[in-house]
Structures are given as structure tokens and as C-alpha cells.
Image 1 (tube, rainbow over the protein chains, first blue to last red):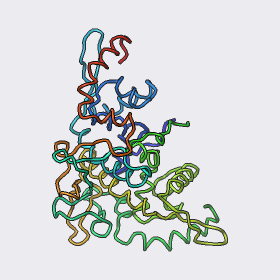
Image 2 (cartoon, rainbow over the protein chains, first blue to last red; image 1 turned 60 degrees about the vertical axis):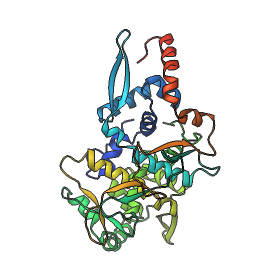
Image 3 (cartoon, each protein chain N blue to C red; image 1 turned 180 degrees about the horizontal axis):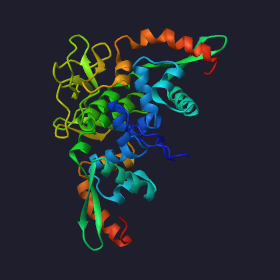
Image 4 (spheres, rainbow over the protein chains, first blue to last red; image 1 turned 135 degrees about the vertical axis):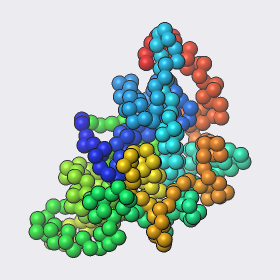
Amino acid sequence: MRRKSFGTMQCPVARSLERVGEWWSMLIIRDALAGMTRFDEFQSSLGIAPNMLSRRLNALVTAGLLTRRRYQERPARHEYVLTDRGRDFRPVLLALQTWGNRHFAPEGASVVLVDAGTGLPADPVLVDRVTGKLITEATHRNAAGPAAGRRVRQRLAPSATAKSKPRRRARADAAGPRR
Amino acid sequence: MRRKSFGTMQCPVARSLERVGEWWSMLIIRDALAGMTRFDEFQSSLGIAPNMLSRRLNALVTAGLLTRRRYQERPARHEYVLTDRGRDFRPVLLALQTWGNRHFAPEGASVVLVDAGTGLPADPVLVDRVTGKLITEATHRNAAGPAAGRRVRQRLAPSATAKSKPRRRARADAAGPRR
């Protein structure tokens, strides 16, 4: 199934997902960050079909998260090594992990981030490096950046939602019931 | 296509992706965090097919990220409102956005997180709330939590990669060339 590409969208979340949003991709990066490099390692960790793993690894190489490196000549064997861009994905996975532990681990956490020095559990939160402030919905909002086009500017206009609600409701009424 | 479920895996990243890892799901949550609640709003923002949007919204309701709320009686109309669990997903999206801005916005950022008070751009980083330390590969590592099973413990054993490399290589050699 060829799915709609997010690559032409301006939004940085969409552009990220275009590279890592396929089923399996983020788990492959997780395993690479845990030190795996070989096809067989990924396969046995994930229980993924070889043709699927092959496609996902190639896509991650194309996206610049992994590089393919020959480690043996005869027979030729390759391993997959994280690039700086791939390693830089770690905060996303840690945020996902933190959210998963909080909401989908009723029996308790299976994986916890710990301080490597003390071994004590860490509590990862997003902070503004500039001001040191904790990032919450009250303290930080998204705004159009210098390269924003019309669509992004509309979506992020300070009162976009408040302004557009009545218009949208009117249009939905005119079109009749839909959902 | 029915894809393999991650829901039975213990890893919190896998469990999270089981709920939000389908194509479109995270962009729907992004739009919900930007204030959208109506089917038509999501559809016109995303350009997604109605049946697909319907499926994704239902899955997010089932996963507890959205609640479906009737806002009009005749004809019946519903809106989709973020739950606390859904709102708590914001740090993941902000981490994805930060990574996307850094790596996939050659023309400059289209969306930037700003301090709501000052309007100045923020630089979101993960910090350990307990110690205040910046979270890096050098300072923080994953460890098995109290509920970890055998597989997770093996994957996270301090020297798992170093120890298992020779074994894995030997097995791959025996099986002949593969990749």
C-alpha cells in the first residue's frame, strides 16, 4: 500500500514522521541505540519479516539515520550504524518511553531511564535550555517560524481556533450531517 | 493490511507506538493540541480520506487519548476532545518537532516553540527532573525496571551487546550469507 507522503508538508512533526513514522522504524532505532548493528540482531529482537526489515533499514539509510557499512568481505556482510542524526533521535524515544511507562504499564515499568552515575531512576521532562523553564502548555506555545507558509501561519495564528470555530460550524451545518 | 501488534511487547516505546504509531495518528494529536476538535477540521487540515480519519479517531478514542462528545442533537454531531493522556503526549511531539527542525528544514524552521511570556524561541531539551541534569547518552542509560521480563532484561543487561556479538556472529556464519 502506497500511503500519502508527509514529506511535502511544512510542519516539522510531519517531516520527521515521513522519515521514522512507518511501523517498525522507531523500534529499529531503539534497538540501534541499544547497540545493535546487524540484520540478524534486529530480526531476532523484533520478530519482523526479513523483507520488511530490509525495506525499513534501507529507508532509514536513505533518511540519513543509519549508514550501511561492510564489515566482512567474503561473503559480503553489512552492518547498520547510527549517524549523528540517528543518535539525535534518542530524546524522542525517551519521551515516548516516559509516556508509555506513565499510561500503559499497569503492572509497573519494564524499562526505566536511570542516572548512569548513581543508578537512580530519572524523571525526563522537557525544559527550555535558554531559560531553564519547564515546558508546559501554559508556558510555551508554537508560533510560525521564519520559513512558514500560508497554511502553517493560519494554523498557528494566536486566535485561529477561536476565530474559525463559528465559520466551521456554519459550513458543517450547510453540508448536512457527516460525523 | 493487518500488521503485527506491538501491544504484547513489554517495552514502553513499543506499547506507546501500538497506540499512536499508525500513519496519521500523531498528526491528529498534533492538530488536537492546536485546538481542533471536529471531524471536518481534521480532514481539511490533513487532507486525509474520511474513512481513514474515522478509523484513526476511533483508535485514539479506544486508546484513551481522545473522548468522543456529542455537541449537537439533531442531527447528531460529535467532537473529539483530548484526554489528560492525550495532552500528556505533547512532549513527544515537541521532541519530534525539535528533531525535524534540526534535520529536515534546510530552508529554516516553519514552526518554532516560543516562550509564551516573552515570545522568544525556546530550545527544548530533556532534563532529569530529579537532579536537573541534561539527559545525554553519557549521563543516562536504560535499565530493567521492576516489571521487566527475561527478554527486556537480556536486551538491557549492561554488557549485552559486547557479550552477545561473538555468539551472534558465529550463528550468522553458520547460516550462510543473508545480508
